[in-house]
Image (cartoon, rainbow, N blue to C red; front, side):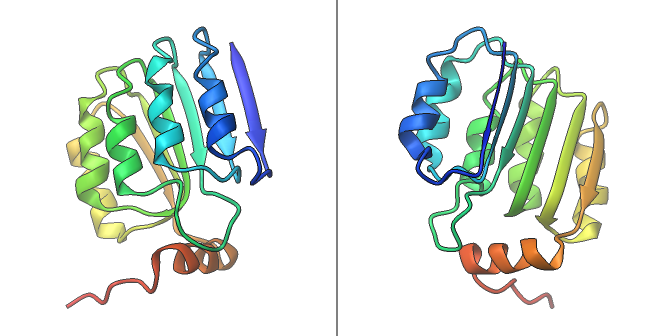
Length: 155
């Protein structure tokens, strides 16, 4: 019912796809494993998944495992109650799609590059979820810039 894997770029999409073969998973923790959105899409088979932690790939070069497109896929996992996302640059528009998750109670955004003002707006979009956010540490910011490029300038 629970599976965790981290710190292996060789896990990648074949490993992410293999996880989809565990249909009774309730808790999944995947970070620093490589892979792409295509591997995450296979998790649609995990109909009992309640808790997901998804962290960025270990690589310092694209493609990013966790990005706005990945969040759009995660917004389809209607059984999720707890979601933790790590080391990415995500937009308010992408995160607001999580309001499609009827059971979401907790959203943790750990080392996520997003303006703090957008977190306040996200809390309005997801009033039934407790949202915790931490800005990227120096090391996480280096990985984010390597994967996504420099942060867009604000007017």
